[in-house]
Image (tube, rainbow, N blue to C red; front, top):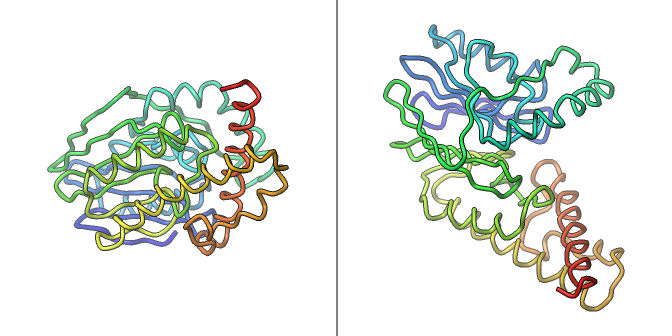
Length: 280
């Protein structure tokens, strides 16, 4: 894990194994708060060791920004902590998490020791956490998934967004209109720094433009997918719409963004074609 210090006692750990997925650590005199947990036990254990060496009180809370495995599988490595998430996160994990974990273990023996641990505390719209001198504001922002939340570290105005903010928006698990509205809301919060769900930390001087680029990207892929549907074009023509023509770079996340972009287009094409066929 690559470790970066964002502010006094606020750290970000970025995976060097899976899509640069990020974990956050906030240390206080009353214990630590962890935001998301890595899918690989070895990486989450690095974070556990880091906290153990600096915070004798241990981890009080682990916050899951949404239910996906790359943000929740490490929960079990914080046995003394309370897990906090949106109500929909717990519901999704309870419904399909065990089966998904069994499949993941069959594909990757390194995951054999993982035990699915569901959130202990859930909320619907907003929740405040107070620990030491820190106050965190947790806000439901349906976007990447219906249960996505963001976490604002008040005072420092550092915003952990989960997969709401990534090098390219990934919309296939959520609603595109809600996604756009959530990005608008993030702009209104005026954060100093943004910790993305995947990728590098966004600094004050760049985050406003990055958020605007993501909003424009959503508008562009919507228009391009809808245009193909209206023309009666084959979905094979989606491959000709490259990510750069929609306003994003193909370089981040070791090129993974190109796959996410094509998945976004396919999702929208299917959505708009179904609407057209139903007369909506």
